[in-house]
Length: 186
Image (cartoon, rainbow, N blue to C red; front, side):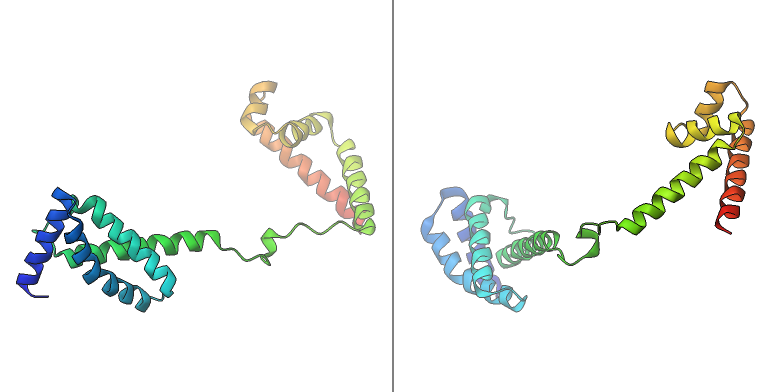
């Protein structure tokens, strides 16, 4: 595109911006629409997608021609940049809505079998029995931490015990639980 043609297109864009000149818009549309479509199709868009996007770009030209600044770029560069950005936006939108239906994370969890339920019940009974064998202060610390969801600091504050004591009692309780459960599994 030579300098004379650039100036001509800039003048036509100015006429569209200032006067809503339909004839100027028609000239720009006839020149740029096929070029934009061809470029978009080279960018892996289907003919229909490219035509739709060209329509969007030309609507931008009609409504926002006043934003075009001939001192910063040619009209061609401005329109192709709009087309490029719209194409990227379309690709982003398309990629965010596609998902793999066979993805294991999207599948419902498998049902628990009867044998697994019995094993879980047995394990739970062993844990309850082991917790029952703990000294009361360790049992209280475990209950506060794991069933009530309190932090070690909150337990220390509620009981008036030093934080180190709370942590030690919980650690001792776990050690005793581990020993009891290992003996029963052996």
